[in-house]
Length: 270
Image (cartoon, rainbow, N blue to C red; front, side):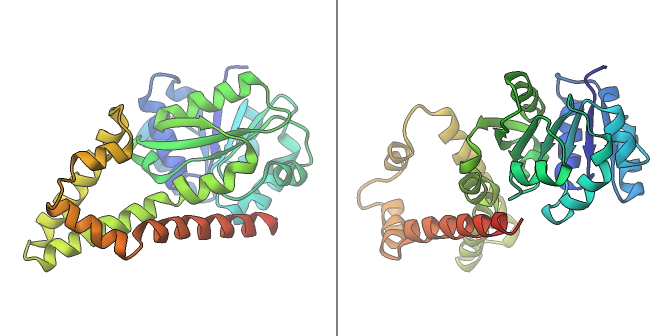
């Protein structure tokens, strides 16, 4: 069978995956099949990216060698029950449902097959995401390689043990929300100081983007980069002193820990 990838779920992440895979170099459009409970959404993606649309999740599963569950955690039981009888031992099942452990997926599916859990994040929508990949006990190296190849189309990938997935969720999964808040605060500060909202937003967004790219490309540590822009007694130093005095570092760490705790709590309910 041709290596065909089926994506169940045409929401933001499913759409990002389809767009990234089609625009990337690893796969062809005719290798992709999409299905969604909202038929018009699946129709839209099929027409936009020239991929195939399946009329049901069962048909998609039957026709594809790799099945990606791009659905919300609350939908995972319904979808797995829907495709259970079509799952074969040679399928590769990939789930991006946050907080749903591999064991729970296996128990709901009632099938022994290679399962890989992936935690992507929303910058995948602009092919700048990062996805943590955790292979299950029946997944072999070739299955992990397939997951890496797929998610590399929309950003970077890392391999982690599943027990670290709650930490990944708290850091990179929820991380964009933290960064958006910081960007909003920077823009609001600019407006308070007299800048027009549009100008303040552009300054905040491009500063964040440029700083992230600099951090990625530089061989220096984040601390060294921070020190380079912080002249003793200068403006940056004055601003950082306020952040240190008000405990910004502790606040961010506490926020990530709170998200981690909530992720573990949600996982335990499955």
